[in-house]
Structures are given as C-alpha cells and as structure tokens.
Length: 208
Picture 1 (tube, rainbow, N blue to C red):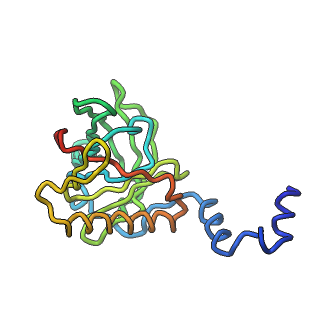
Picture 2: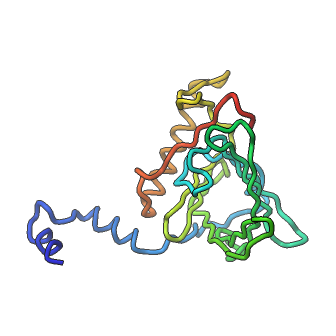
C-alpha cells in the first residue's frame, strides 16, 4: 500500500489517464457484443489465426472451429480440429454450445465432451464480429483466453512461421494481417493484453 502511495505522490510514477482507464476496463467482467448475432450466418467453418490458448492449444497449429446448428437439442455442435505440436495427425475436440442471451445470441454456455459431455457450462462470449461475418473474436469473462477467427483460408507458414503464399497474392496476406491487427486492437480496448495474444500457424504440409 505504501508503495502505491509513493507512486501516486510522484508525477513521474503516477499512472497515466490511459493506464487508469485500462485498469478500470480490466477490472470489469468481459461482456459479449451487444450486436445481435445471426446464428445461421455464424455457423460453419472458422480458422483460428490467433489466440490466448487453452492447455489443449499450446503449440498447436492448423486450428479450425466447425459450428453446426442442432435443432433436436436446440444447441450448436462444435468440432474443434487441430494438430498438436510435432504431430502430423489431426485431432478433434467436441463441444456443445447453448445460447444464453437470445435474441442477441452472443453468450453461449459450452459443454465439453470428455467421453461424455460434461455440464461445466464454460462461458463463450462473442466480443467482436465483422458486419460481413468475415472475422470474429471470442473471449471468456476473466480474459484468460481469446480466439480470433476468420472465414477465409489463412496464409500458410512453414514450421518456423515463415509465410508461404502458395498462390495467394501479397494483397491477400496484407489483408489478413490488417484484419488481425484490427481484431487485436479491439481486444485491447476490451481489456486484453496484446502481449499475451499469439499467432496460430497454418503449416502447409498438414491438411486443413
């Protein structure tokens, strides 16, 4: 406490207005976007191009989320596909998402399948979504994880993260970089630390 008082007593160490605003935002639970999400447009395939990873995703590449509406259970069936670090075999993890804030549809409760579906109800928040549904950002209330996803197939990299355009134009690569930077900036405004956000590689030698 005395250390904080000393910081405030000196204009050189006193937190700036921007820093105080950032701390205030971070102290609030993350909330989903207030923009209504059209589930029919949202379902389908998404490529995860950056994240603050869960334990399952640390070191993983070629990460893809597949969403399908299940009318019989009134939920979203989720198939997360990825390649673990050093593996050439694609793995899958299955989840179910139950909408919590209809008609906005931006807050889901996620049940993860571990043999059976576990009723843990992990909060899944759509915090950013392009008007044309070309990219989205997913977060959790305490900001411990983040996923930035796009519809367009990502630019490939080699095992060292060096881009391989593979027929894609340099313009397409720059467009994806611009989308990623915009998404990261928006996440920062919502209290995320950009230094924790990692790019997800898409290795050319592995199937998507």
